[in-house]
Image 1 (cartoon, helix red, strand yellow):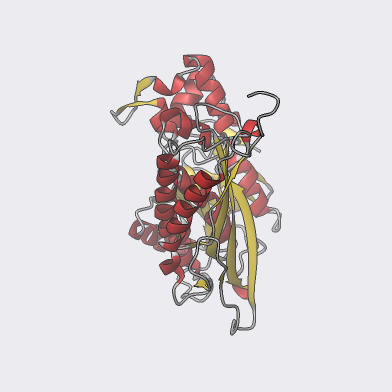
Image 2 (cartoon, rainbow, N blue to C red):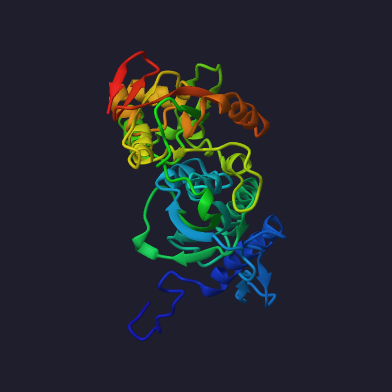
Length: 379
């Protein structure tokens, strides 16, 4: 390019025509999810039938005591693993789980989600549109799993500000609008000694601690660690990349079935709930227990998944460090009365979620864990 050649937006790395095509892909994906909230709070009304047109949701007629909130989160550095193995149709499950499962632990019912997909560039041809289509398909599947509507799916080409593995590095963050009844909100203030903690199984890493996972495997197996195959304890011979990319379980439907959400039937009184993500059990249960000042002794947690244990082993990571970094086999915990434990476990089975009685709320503060290796951990 000589000194007199005009500089265009395309020369700067942004082709607006291709971006418009990518945006339409996400728009068409969002339309597929409108049915999820039909007849419910958060029902989307499309005023103009165009991907850039105005969309609204009615607010009139909400009963007294209705409340709403917005939560924000993202898929974190798990997106880098997606780029490594070139699988883009499951990362939305991680994004949606981080958004909607944060809402249900407060007693809310997620209704609408939106996101911003930051990418390096879509290029000057349509080579990356198939990747956008994969992301969109996963977005629809995850939204259907959580029974929410996708309100938008913004795309931003960020150029050199986005870097990572491969040709299509990206970051995906979003927001979730949820509704609830003030009298049903879960604050943790009603947690009392003698109540039981029921945990929901999560065999993978979810989205927490992936920086430690990536660093550990890279130091052990080199820059292309994701291609390394290992034999899991379950007998599967898979790559580390496939194992780490296992999508997060979405517990949203189960939780709403239990506590009733915005206007459903309450089938079980939940006194406290924790979404086990960043900071692991000590941080998330610690946050849940703070309002009551009580503690917990967890004696019967799920055993962490094979890939989690493998990472801990090859990285010489202590149980103390692992339990405050990863979920270690449990993606969510709820506090219920002893009489309701078996009910919760049975309901979880209806949603294909394994659940078990993990321990008891104690009067004295502190979190005490009997680890999968038999260690007694205190936080």
